Structure formats: structure tokens, C-alpha cells
Length: 273
Image (cartoon, rainbow, N blue to C red; front, side):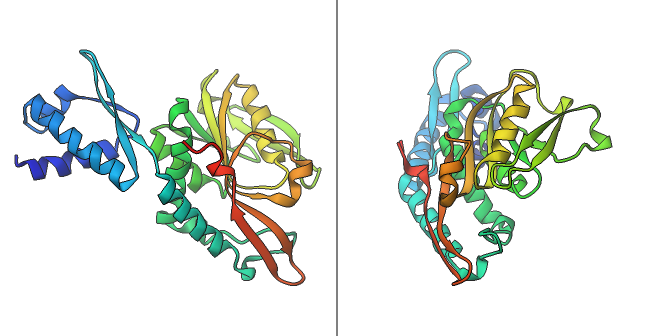
């Protein structure tokens, strides 16, 4: 196999298996090349991944060692993407009654969702999470995008039980913005006891839904290692019940009557590595 062909095949393979340890003997056998040649190829690939700002290789030494692709979106790429996202969301035609923002079109764009997934994965890649948790329904595509870069399953919390999911655990919680009592459920088979998870959601006002998910996850002795939200509402900060989270954009100065809205960068860049 020519080196150019091998590089394409290897690059595709490692990008499709993020955070998974890939041994040199495996690559040498798969691509019919000497380990020394594979090592040289990996050096070239690692250089290009960093140059493109989409991640890097982590080397693991020892007999069972190899490389692990770490998805890491560069600050430059992240700044550019989030700035574009802010500009798109500032369109006054997106304003809905109650100060909500229409985002269904953005949540339906595969490329945009993939970029958002890459951003959150950059933040959570070092946390060794075992699952991504979200609540039905709009957060689902975001959760799958993040999970694809972390190589973990998605767990979906629902508002009501499904007969096809077997026995469930349910809790009542207070919505942070409406102060209404609501219910959420999670099937017992979806998450193992003591799992380390991250929560992903599309929009957060006071954070009641996310706080409810945290309470539900306590029933599974799960550890919430990180929380990611696409957009947060600045006007709800005083009543917010969730403090530690990562947001991409912040919605503020919403004036439904005059059709004005201001969208700025969230706290994603705080302590940016």
C-alpha cells in the first residue's frame, strides 16, 4: 500500500474512533506496514490535526500502548464558529413569545450540530464520561453529536414513561422558570449504577430542567462531571439553580415588543485550555 493511501485510511479510522486506544500492532497489521512506518505516519497525521485545529494524538507507552485521538477544537476555530452562531441568533425574526428564541432550523443542520458537538467534546474529553444525558426532545441531536466525539452512548430522559422501555425511575421537580411541578423518568436499563456522565441541553433559563435531571441521576448514583448548554438566558441569572455549566452563547436584552435581541458569547472560553 502506498503511504498516501495508508495515510488516508489511517486518518479516517482514528477520526472515527475518538478517545479509543489504537495499538501500533493493530495498525501495522491492518495497513500491512512496519511499525516504524506506522509511527512516522502517525507523526505526520498528528501534525496536520493540530495544524487544522481539530485535535491531537495522545501516545500511550508500553506493550499494550498506542495512540488515542483527542478531539480538541482550537480557540481560533471555536471563536469563529461561536461568533457566527451569535450573529445568526440575533435575527429579531427568531423572537418568540415569552422571550424564547427559535432555534429549530439550527438544530436541524447536521454540519452545525456536528461543530457544536465537537466544541463540547473539547471541553469534556478529559473527564472520562461514560454517557451523555439529555432530556427529550430538542437536546437529542446535540447529545448525539457530543457522544459521537466522546465515543459514549446517549441516555434520554423523558417526560413520561414508554411501555417499550420497561421499568423506570421517576421524580417530580420544580421548573426553574415557571415554578410548576413536572415529572421526568429514566428507564432502569439505560444507565448503570455509579456512571460518570455529562448533561447536554439546548436552552437554559433558570436551570430547573437540568437540576431535575441531576436529581434523577442521583437515583442511579451517577456522577455529573459536566453540563453543556447551547444557549443560556442572561435575565434568569438571579434565579438560576444551576451554577456550574458550559454555555456557547448568552441571550440578553430581549425586547419582544420592539423586536430586539442581543446574543453574545457564553462562558465557553472561561479558562480555555
